[in-house]
Amino acid sequence: MRDSSRKDEKVEFHLGSDVVKRQLKVVTYHARDVYPELLRSTLLVRIVAAYEAFLVDCIEEVSTRSREPFLTDGRVDFSQEQLLSIDAQEGVYHHIVKKTLRRLTSGGLKELRKFYQKNLGIDLTSEPVTFGTIEEIHDRRHLFVHRSGYADGEYVAKHGSSWAVEDKLLPVPEAYLVSVLQTLESSGLHIKKSLETIYPAPPTRHYVSGDFLFPNEPEHLLFISFQVRNDQGRAGFSDLSLPLNERDTLKNIVAWASDDGQLMRMIVGGDSRSLVALRNILRERERNGSISAIESFKVKR
Image (cartoon, rainbow, N blue to C red; front, side, top):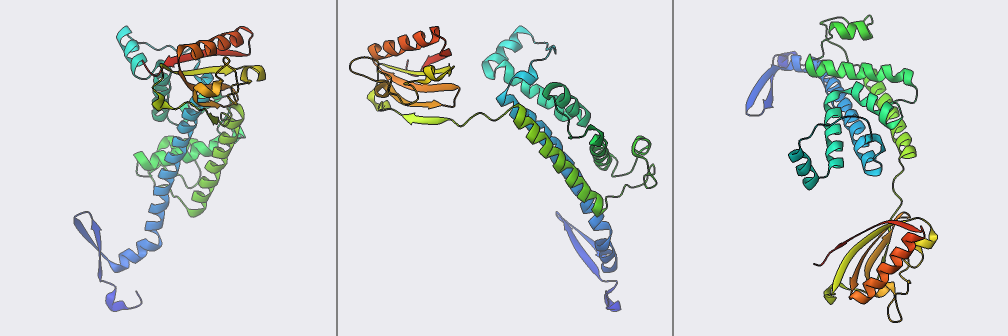
């Protein structure tokens, strides 16, 4: 640009198969002002979109830990055919969760906040009064998506100031973008910590291996799971030391077993004698209240 003989030189921009030429002096001016502003506005759109996706993803994660947020008095209308089809394909609960997530994704920030407050018991910010800042960020992003960044009357009335003028382009200064990152990061950390306190991650599952091998072609092969109520219910299962008869222990008929502190799972195989003995032990512990909710199904039919 110091060489005045080159000020009218053209710079080529390749846009797909098209080539657009601009004067060097125009490109240089834009590089100082227009392009950084355009980049910041683009980042604003992407950052808010990522924040909204984070809010929805958190709800999906909670759905894997607890059904409580979805046990509402809301009504869902299904035909009998639809209900049977849903039950066969994915299950009613997973269908309700997916439907809720789709509704919240399209419902915007207010619907998401309402769900968090009513169903999860937390707000999007540690101080509810600061939600207005997030709302302004979201509304400005909305204008860049739907009005190319030009303010409308609603935005001016709601967030009006000396710089917000209807039908004028909204700025995204560097300081503002930095504050957006800080505000949304603070909100995200607040949500993460709050949800992890209310809906903690399931404990680590521990596995133990038995002596049973699948190539043995057993007479029966079963998957068994049950809820453990106390240490008495876990005794002999966590280390596979439970005696079944004079000949076998649990270790002899188990391929593997796992325990997360609440739910015990195992794959067992063998003849009817050993499995009947195991079934009798499970029923006895269920009767004395040390385990509950026994479920099983045949792996080999």
